Amino acid sequence: MAGPGSARLARVLAAMAVIGVMLVSGSGAAQPDPGDGTPPPVVTVRFATLGVGASSVTDLIAELAQNKGFFLRHGIDLQVIHFIQGGAEAMAGVASGGIDMGTFGTPILIGIAAGLPIKIVGSPPQKRQSFELVARKGINSVKELKGKVVTSGALGGGSHESLLKILHDNGLTENDVGVVATGGTDTAQMALRSGKVDAVVTAGLIRIKLVDDGVGTLIARARDYYGRYQHSFVLATNEFIKAHPEAIRNYFLAEREALEYAKTHLDEVVDYAARRIKLKKELIADYYRELFDEWDLSFAIDVEGTANAVAILKDLKEIKPTVRFNPDTWLDPRFLD
Image 1: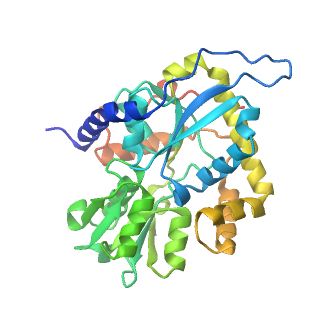
Image 2: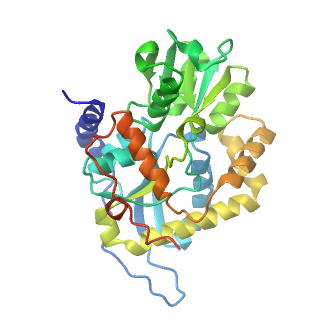
Image 3: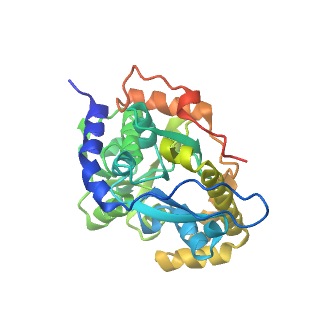
């Protein structure tokens, strides 16, 4: 009988045709960096990310960086494509040939394990598992969720996997709760507000807003359950690596410049975020300061943390037990300066 990982891959492949129609065509042939101080040739990068709006605070910084021209100065026409249904949908976009690069979580590992022609080329500034479990008022522990309804992102995504891990370590299984997969974290938090569910897996500013609005209580952080574990990665397709190696390097240069700008222009970043999500500016500022302390702008890949992530995905039956993690074939870190 096929396991959950096989079912997940089947859903990805079934979605490929639909996603492929939605995405734009690829960029042109590779162009070398002139190396004489002139701006590099512009290369289009179709970049996959998850969610919209406040679901990713780094997405907000990326939007601001695009508006200020950081990526174009490094020869990158960054075309961000949001996959609001989660990582499995994003991997369908990769499989269809409509994505060049992207950053999200463990579905990247599931894709590599399933044979998709991609490699991990780096890390986002925040590697840790960021998902958090927020319950409605009156529920104060994970064990109290038995018999309740919990919503996460799409099946096979990092938020769903986090829920399984948290439940398991609290003596519960998916069968002990009613799990509703609603898509991205933006959609999931709306279900909690409506009273249709008892708890939600979410992250970042959305969690802060739910708690500040008196809607819910934070009862678990996934990072407290995973140990040394790298959750998020930056991928590139093998085809794009071969055609545009310099564009990948330039992407990381632009990303580092954008993040360093954010750290030194906190007020501007907070103002921008506040226009996208109705939340007190002081709460947004406090959250960004917390993130700044955790950022690793080397974008280095935690090889041991990645190996542990693969092992956990095997335990969750998202990756076949016969798969072996080989850094030489899964990772390509040569683009990091």
